[in-house]
Length: 178
Image 1: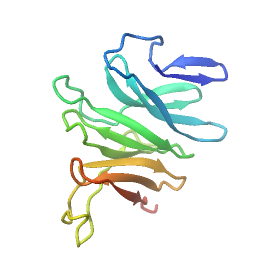
Image 2 (image 1 turned 180 degrees about the horizontal axis):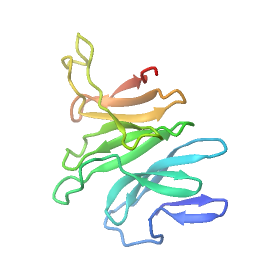
Image 3 (image 1 turned 135 degrees about the vertical axis):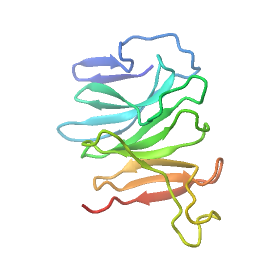
């Protein structure tokens, strides 16, 4: 079971506190990134014991907020959606990965969440090399894209696989200049 500690005490990663019987064999929570400074923020992922879904979280000023990058409501007859937050930069932009309801288990979409925007920006790697990418033709969209890090300038690093079970390749995504 996950918990977060602050100078004034501890709190549970469940919205109502406490612990519940767990239908998953491995409940989990994990801090993945944090920001230094006067207003530190922590990001990570956890298993919501009520919905049995993996969600992201952001801790700001000792307050935990669930985060869900998916846009399609969960359907218990299909693959459950998931969200994981992997890193955050000092300006509050964070990155991670998600899977929508009903997508194949290994399918992933990367995202960037800007602090001043209500919805995340999806980052699905698309081959733009005229010669192709790792044997795939130009225009191929990766089966899985995961964003693992974001620096203070908003540059994102991660990996992608062109096919289900395919070899991972790294990427660097540079934001457009404003």
